[in-house]
Length: 316
Image (cartoon, rainbow, N blue to C red; front, side, top):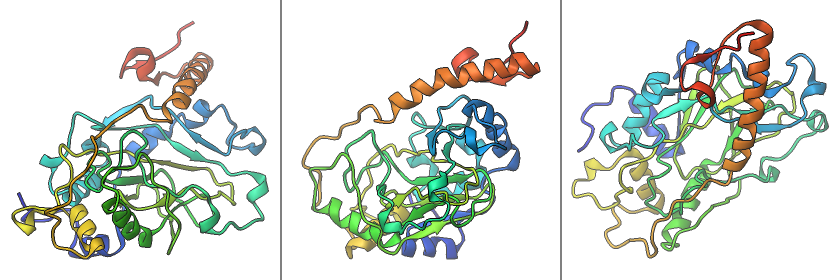
């Protein structure tokens, strides 16, 4: 059923998404939720925020200890996500229904401070989804969502996107109905997504993007909460008004109004994410650090890995 009234996305934002494949939701996350998920970040990392010599790793994908339903964590951004996908009723709320404090950290390295890396040479251009076979109509990765946990400026590790690459990915997937497990594209027409604390940048799922080098070594924290559709994308709807903005962007990229004859030629598959093992190993380390900090300070902490969603405090 078509959306008859847009409450979160303006006409200009919708047009920007159809042309460029991404849209910014300023202050899409309330500040108290941002602060809640970053309160113990340095304890979890085991680093001193004032001493860069303790920052042993350049990039860390932290595991989740706390979570909040997505619609509560970022209500403005959630409303925009629903409108981009054609309505909340199309979203599968049995998968990834919450946002967690699984921060993606970029601390940089001293070797990058005085260097410039061309976006094309970043070496990490991809589209998200390391847990399913990608098809043109895949709904597992409904959108690529980037939450900014602090102000992010140029040369301090912003995510780079390649709007021009979205059309190429659409064409590539159209020409490969057998599906692909991963997709890597180049950086044509790239731009960096800087922004303010609490901003949420929502990209088309076929938008190539890449982490960048943090030359300024200002700690960069983001998350990429996923959203999954109940059904695959539909490129042959009876009423053209029923196409979601995500579906319409694909059709525009291919220069067609519908795809009545296109269909996948192999079965859909889901599998364990390749990043899972690394996060599982970090859980034990982070819990130990949180326990030690609680014992030292008397402050409670929350971790679903100890006692579910309630606060946990080490008592002597």
